[in-house]
Length: 111
Ligand code: FES
Image (cartoon, rainbow, N blue to C red; front, side, top):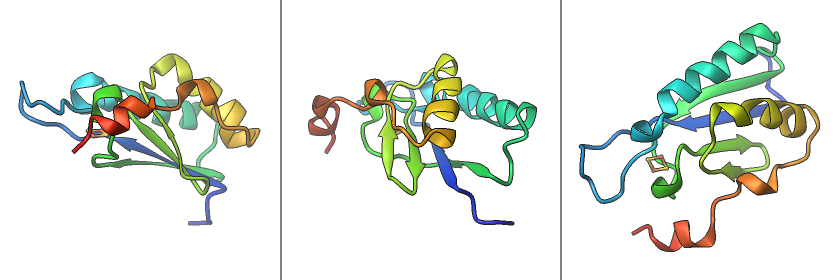
């Protein structure tokens, strides 16, 4: 495997129903992961970039959360409709998408 230019980590953490932290899994991250993978397949992006599922990234209440390396940029509340922007603007274009950053409140709510 060649070193990817950028690596997308998608939180697929789940917690029991009613857990106070909630989870990205309960907010559709599994479907988001599959949509990213389908998009990579359709656009032949494998090899240049990578997508990997991961556990909790921190601000669970604003999930699904997506982390992009090497910059270490975290996106919150990512929907399938945001995938093209993440690929075109950040992965290919190199410009992070500020509108998808988590709020400061999301971090302060975590313990
Ligand atoms: S469960 Fe996804 S960030 Fe915590």
